[in-house]
Amino acid sequence: MSFFNSLPFKYLLPIVLLGLQFLLKFLVDRRATAFNFFTALLEIPVSILFLSLSLLAAFIIAGKGSVQFAFFSFPIILVVLLVCLLCWRRAVEHFEKKNLGYTACLGLLNFVLSIPILLFIINFLINSSI
Image (cartoon, rainbow, N blue to C red; front, side, top):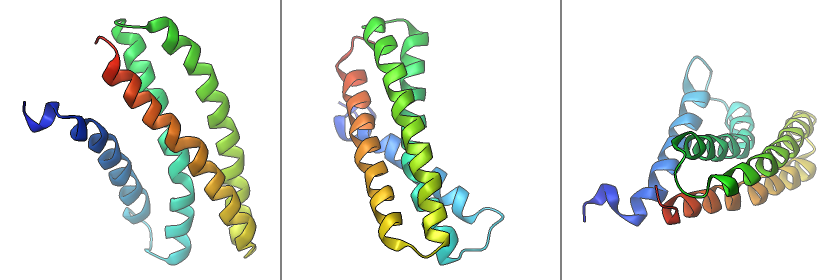
């Protein structure tokens, strides 16, 4: 078994993509300030959910395995994404007003909502017959 077919790599690749996206958003054509770092950090859950939807869309396009389950999951994840978008916007507003308690709660809520979905989608893809 090669490293690229191993289970850790299947989890590592999406994490690397998210890390790369974070670094590019944070560093490209922006000043590396604490404010920019934390606002980019607050956006990670939204990126996680977009990645989850992208993986699910690719699975649906491939048309192999449990496509019905993927179609069922897609709108649910989309609703969670909309909730996370609203929380992210509010978290940034509170961060700008120095309301760090609200910022932390909203940011944590977004991570708690988004990370399990990505792990679920990765597990779904690994266990499906692609």
